Amino acid sequence: MEQLSAVVGRSADQLLVRPLSPALGAEIVGVDLAEQLDEGTFEKIREAWHRGLVILLRNQTLSEEDEVRFAERFGPPAVLQSKQFMRTHPAVMLISNIREDGKPIGALPDGEMQFHTDQCYVERPAMASMLYAIEVPKSGGNTLFANGYTAYETLPEDIKRRIAGRLALNAYDYDNASTIRGAAVRNDAPSYVHPVVRTHPATGRKALYVNRLMTRRIEGLPPEESEEILNFLFAHQERAEFIYEHVWRPGDLLMWDNRCTLHARTDFSPNERRLMRRVTILGEKPM
Ligand code: SIN
Image (cartoon, rainbow, N blue to C red; front, side, top):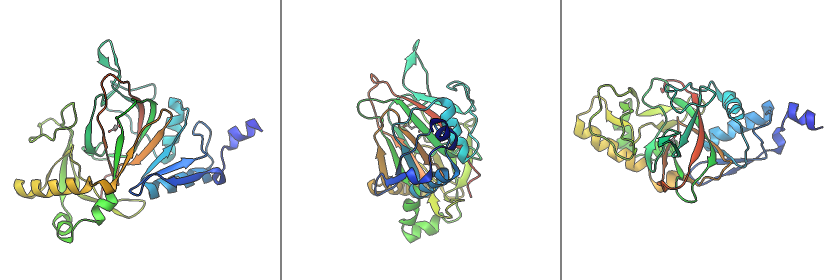
C-alpha cells in the first residue's frame, strides 16, 4: 500500500483549496510535494494558482530535487545567471541574510524590499517564483503580494487611456537595501522595455506591469509626465485592499505568478536568521 501511494501519489479529491485573503492567495491543503503528484491533483493546483495568483502549501519537507520537480510541472526552471548563490541544481538559489566568514550565503540578504516583479529587466521574465522557507525570523521578513489584475481593473478610465499601448523601461539598478528608487539608470544595468499593461496568456486578464523598484520611465513621454503617471500607478497598485501579507513558517512552500502580482518584503532584524530556497520558472515575453 505504502509503495503504491509513492507511485500513484495523492489523488485530486484529497486536496482542499481555501482563500488566503480577500485580495489574493489560495492555501492548498492535503498535498505532500515530496510525493509524485498525479495529473488530476496537479491540474487542481494549477487551476488554484491561476485563480488565486499565489499558492501556499504548508508543512512541507522538501529536498532541492522535490522543489525543482514541482517547479518543472509548470515549465522549465530558469537557470541562474550568476552562480554565486546557486545550490546543486542550476536553477536553485538561496535567499538569506546568514553570513559565513562574513559573506552572505544567499541573495537579497537584508531587510525591507520595495514592490517588484522578478526579472522584469530581461526579455523573458520569470513566469513564477517559488520560495521554500527553511528558517524564518520571529517577526518581520514577511512577503507582501499585490494583485496586478485588480490594480489595473480599478484604475480611473483616463489613466487607462493614458497608459494604453505604452511601454516602460525596467532596470536592475537598485541599491543593496532595495528600498531606494534611483533617479538615473547606469549604462551597464540590465534593462528591458515591456508593456505597462500586460495580458496573462492563460487567463486572458490584463494586469498592471510596472513596479516601484525597477520601472524607471514610460517610453515616449516627457520625464515629468512619465514620473507623474508612474507615481500614481505605484501608489494605486500598493493599496492595502489589493495586498496579502504572508507571515512565514518553516516548511511553507509559496509560489507566485509574476505576470499578475507584485511582491515586497517587510523589514526584519539582522540578528535573526532567514533562509529560503528559491526556484524561478521561465516565462514568455510580456505582451
Ligand atoms: C524576492 O523578492 O524574490 C524575495 C522575497 C522575500 O525574500 O520574501
